[in-house]
Length: 385
Ligand SMILES: *Cc1c(COP(=O)(O)O)cnc(C)c1O
Image (cartoon, rainbow, N blue to C red; front, side):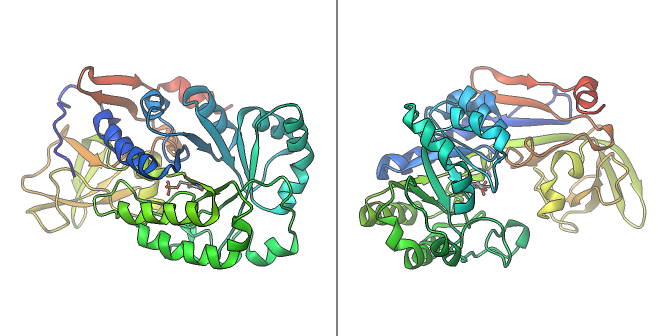
């Protein structure tokens, strides 16, 4: 973890605070991979859609990928470069706009491809540069949690080899896409590629590109970048294809904070603290994943003298962030800094219980702390009726 050197005394909480310096460092790591290999790297917006950062990020990455029409539109409007999309199924009513916005569309099955093939071919005839791919399911993943494993039995994500060969219709198809990783290192990628090649290698030679999906934890300290580079080179050289990566989490890993304040202290068999931020509303992965986010200066429960259980201001009993210990007793109004809060937070938060969304702040050397967006009652009311 990097030293926290931002003066937060005057900020109002709760807020997400994204450090542009750290985001830029991640971009440099990713760019070094594309520079060394010629692979193209896209931002998977579902993890991080803080579009005020897109002008900076677009200097380093080839474009964006989207999981929906809205994400595609955001990427096209604010990021530029290439605009890719994958969705398990597309809506007929959205396809014309998707074709207008995107240059690469990945279909989940040949059935999806057949449904929209005429639209795609017509667009190409009209001069639109539009490449299409099929998402394959190599039925190999090293992910323990089913909610994040696209290869679990009965998964709807991707086409298995059996389904691929039964429905083969590659005319007009330019690429193959797989996404089977989650927060993993390049040794997992290497083993995954072995299976992908064994099963789908014979089709890869006819493709223009292979997309390795996301889940590559490239910007993590212990990530083996050299192995990633050799994986990319191997595939590009063996099959004469362009490799794409579309990391989400790795783009924004360890680049931001969620700053909160202690609202109340109490006791029920243990010390309790109620904060002005909520796991359910502001960091839903804490409950979904689940995991315990780190707080600067705090230890594991029992590690330091004063241990507290942190809960949110909602009335959900399970809105528990975790247990933390401190050298000194906490005080009402004390600020707490949760780390690694850029990705899968802003894109997933909600106003359950009428809890306001955290303000979004950025930090850079010149502008210091800058308020990007503050939310209000109007944002809460605006999505209800
Ligand atoms: C989620 C997802 C990504 C990004 O995954 P990360 O784990 O955030 O890197 C990329 N591609 C597809 C198809 C996805 O579903």
